[in-house]
Length: 200
Image (cartoon, rainbow, N blue to C red; front, top):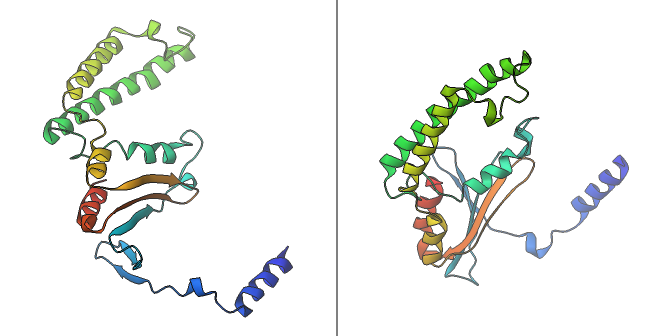
């Protein structure tokens, strides 16, 4: 196998570059470390294919959180702290309040209910039939917060903004070591893309 790879590599080195490989790419890096690769496409001067990647993927997962990278990729289309809400301050407050309640619920179930199950008092710590009064009260509180939160959510706003500005083909994928977002947009909407994606 090693010989085949080395032989293939020597063929590549000895072969003259194909005409499609002579690409004049402009590269620059911002102060925050983000690197840009720019390639002019004179045949399509009014359209930009723009994308960005994050060095995260399934390699960052472990048993118990497998699939999280791909799930997160999809969630990134839902909105941001400013896009997908009609009141960013209320949205942030309600998300923070829900987080506190969810953390308390998880603590009670993972520790209190799991301990009860270990002692044989209940068979399933997650079964609502075994909820304590405190757990039931916290679940009601969480449902109430979620209902309040719905009033501030603007569904599909991220996609709608892009589509209304003439973008096409918004997509993403997650692989072993990276997550990538791409779309095509009118060249006069590059600033919009930069703002939307930095917010994402």
